[in-house]
Image: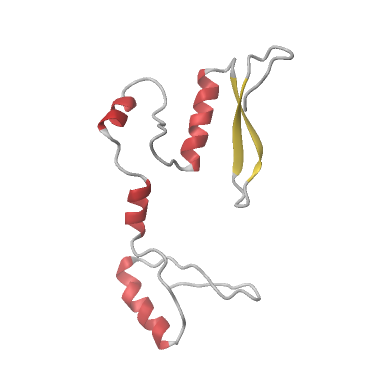
Length: 125
């Protein structure tokens, strides 16, 4: 069962439907003459494509010290924040993580500051 509570004036909602239930949900929507469109046919496939299996070179990074972030793929925000935190922990005298605000989705916008910490020294953001 899906329960939706629409705010006044809302006309569209996004609904996640398990693959086994799609025909039943489509039939019900058609029966009630409700307009719909499928945005993502296979969510698992989309997730798999967003997070492809690691290459042999990347697998080798897992066994060595350090972070396995690479510049060859688009990474999730959580991975990027993890990398920034890793840099700050690995180089505490040079790197600090700062939050400069939030995205329109409410997620923190983090940056790193690279600086020797000496008075009047320049910093790179």
